[in-house]
Image (cartoon, rainbow, N blue to C red; front, side):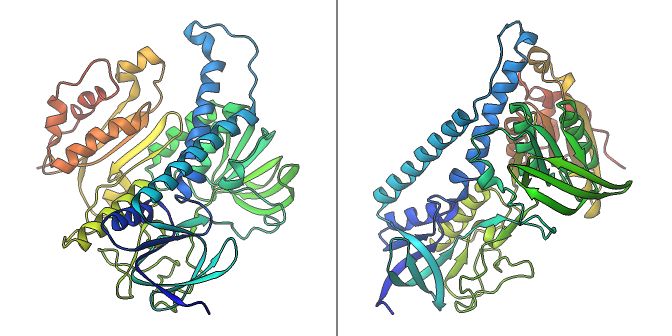
Length: 465
C-alpha cells in the first residue's frame, strides 16, 4: 500500500463542473488534485456535446449544398467524405483537450491520469494509467464521474457490437442503412445528421412518441420534419431480437402494435438513455449512498451522505447538460465561500440540435397539467415570423405558457431556426420576473427570429376569471 498523500481539494472526474471547481480551488491556494480515468475535460468536449454538434454542422453544410439550387446556386455532383468529417471533428477535440491541459497547468491543479476507487472515508486509491498506485486523502472531496450510454438487454445486441455515440462519432465511413435505437436527443440529432450525409435511417422508439419528455404536438412536428427528410420512424416498437454484426449486416425483430416486423440494416446506434458511473468505485467505503437508480444521493446544496463530500453533474442526478454541471460548480463554489445557494427553483434551458432545433425552458403543457397548474397557451407557426420567408426555414412553431390568473411566463417551447437563441430571450424575462406583456410590447429588431415573440405573446388568451 502506498503512503497516503494529503490533498486539500480532491476531485474524482474531470467533467465540466469538476474541472472548473478544481481550477478555482487551486487558484485559491489550496492543494488540488483531479483524478481522471481517460477523458480530459469529461465527455462534453471529447465524445458528446461538442463532437456531435461538430458533425451535425457538417451535415447541415451537406444539406445546404444539396439544396443549393433552391437558393439560386448551381453546383455539380456532391460527394461526402466521412474521413474529412471525422478529421474536422478530431481537430476540434484535440484543440479542446490542449486548452484544458493549459488551464490545469496555469491554475496549479494537478491532473492525475488513472482509475480511482474509494477505500475509506475520503481516501482514494488511484491506479495510474502509466503504472503504479497512489493513495490520496482529501480534506474535501468532489465526485464528478458522469454517466455512460445504457445498453438495453436485448438478445443479440451485445454480440452485434452495437455502437454508442462514442464509437459512432469515430466512424470514417457512411453507414448504408443506420438503425437508431432510441428517439431522444442523441438518437434524433445523429439520425438526421447521417440521413443528410446520405445514409438510409430508421429510428426505433420503445415509448409512445419520440422526444418523450415533450408535449404531443412537439413530437408530432418532429416526426413530420424527419419524415420529410426520408427518415423512417417506429414508435411503440420493442426490439425483441438482434442478429448479425454492426458495420456489416444486422437484422432486428420488432414487436409493434400492428404485429412483428423485421428491419434489415448495416449499422446500429444505441441511444436509449444514460447510466451513472457510480458502480465499482467504492462509494460504500466512502459512506456515499446511492438512490434507487444508481445516482449519488445529494441534498439541494449537492452535499452527499458523507461529510465533506459533494457530487457534481450527471452522477448526482442533475439534468444531463454541460451548462447544468457548470452551475453545480457555481453553487458549490459560492457555498464554500459562505453563501447559501441551492439547486431549488433553477430555470434550466435545453436545446436539441436537430434542424430546425427544439428548445424549451420552463414548463411544458404536460408538466403543467401533471402539477395541477392552470395555464394560458399561445402558439404560432414559424411561418408567421417574416425572417423565415427570407431563409425558407418555416417548419416548426413557438409556444408559450402563461399563468392562468397572472401574467407570469411559465414556459416556452420552440421548434425552429435559431430556437436556442430565441429561447434565451424568454429565459431572461422569466429570470427577471417580467410579465409576458413586456415581450409582447418590446421593440424587436426586424427581420429576426426573435421578432416572432411579439406575435406569440400577442396570442395569449385573456386571464381566467
